[in-house]
Image (cartoon, rainbow, N blue to C red; front, side):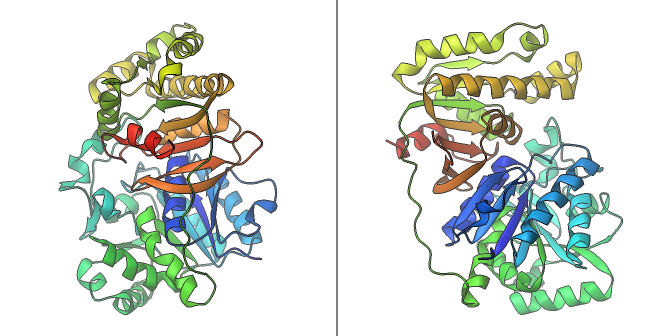
Length: 421
């Protein structure tokens, strides 16, 4: 049977966030790691989320991988395609949101799509085309110091306009507030102006549901997971989707660990909270650069502490410290060292009996999932908005939570493990 929705996500935590939203709204969803080499993964599911690691790679590579995912999704007969990126629109003037979206529009022979990263539950709203994080403009938030994709402009029309040669327009809140028919009328007007990208304002979930209804006829939708809230109901109204069933938590026993590579303000708060009651090990990128066998040392340290409860292994640091390291050894090199180390540490932890693992940060999650050879995830219950527990598909399953750096309450790590007790 053909799938209803095929999604392409530009990082692994974002893919899990989207899959979580779809599952909560009643879509049987599987998350795949990378473009599948088989058609079997789409059997008996409503939606498939293909998780890529394309957010910060060169734009031509991101386009090539995204088009490969699109071709696989098209072979599954998907009625609609969703391109998922971060609710903080993480990107640079070179891409990758604009170039990937342009390529997907061409691949689908479509002339208009939306861009709506809003996720009000987590404080991300779009008003008059400007992205807010809580009460701050994106450009005034902690994202202005992001080590890979610093966001210094909150005007999404301008940001996306610098990434594409196509015209970018705006559907403002006053139109969104009038409902789906008003939004569709705005789409028609933008088409007449030869606009291919429509930034759509959204300040609450009612806006997102109206937008979801309005995009039922679009072949391609792009945005954060919030805008996906309204998509399942379109299929339900068409008689293609049944009622929602609550997902079960992973039934996996074993040791617990947290790997944190995110340097976001929220993740650093979560790290500090866990350090108050649990043992923690700070990864030093300069030691990795100097050739020290940090991975082996971490593994031995973990063996000494993990029997009494969860352990925390982290490289999270504030902007000043991150900048100091990057100035010494280079931004990309520092990131690569941390990712490679986290992947190898994850392999060692699993070999030593860890079966319940939380990973914080999109880049870190990508490195860990690839190092562990994970191909697919079943989506379980939500821990905090945007972050569910998942269970890996395979002979020796893991309970795995992939957390976007900015998501979750300060007590997220302890809360997550309590759900499995």
